[in-house]
Length: 319
Image 1: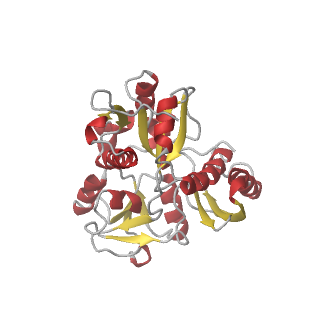
Image 2: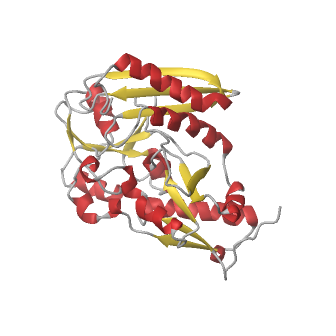
Image 3: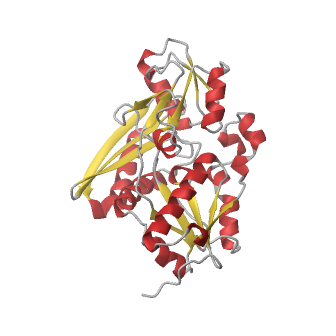
């Protein structure tokens, strides 16, 4: 099949947010495309697009995300640029992505998944278990807050937003004693050795759905972009996310819902673990399921139904 490859005169335009992590993910995408087709950097143009979620006044005010909007905060303007033809593809952190895409767009390319674990960050490099009673933990994630309060109800949780540098500065200023970051982000930024942290095993704290995964979105009718992206698509990541995102969709997951989940491939079998929590951390329900990899999405929906049946009405917002 003939593919019209990008050139310096007609580069493939890659849309992204402007945060250091978002740019690192866009650069990784560009490197993989360059290697796949033996192209020079000038064949790809990285286009930075400011989203509502990047508004500094919102970040600095430490307003909860649910008061500002939902996961579309980090994608809406980028997707509009793609529909308008200003960019050709968009690079996203998959844990920020809604389970449904706008009409005319499709998300079907994934890069190899990074470390899925959470990083517990404190200047003293203490694990969560060694934090003193009444210690203050900063996080903007409802999942992390609920999991934290469920496991350590003696701790205090405050709203805490911003990039890695902003959060470290807040720790130094005494706003909180510790916070959480994603191990994937630290590794992609080359900061895993310089940021004082302890990695949290999934068995102790199940991660967010699709944590550590990068997804690439395109226009549905763009056959050229589809063919180019196929060269860097990672099937195992896609198989894992099919199960996790089906689980999330069946729970009607949003930024207002504490949901965690992780799919692992074990030979020909997929192992999916899921957890739902009350917002205040007073109760957590967990379950798991194993089955053929090809049935991952069905398994995600089945696991969600089992947890919802156990939870009953009112456990999660909207249910």
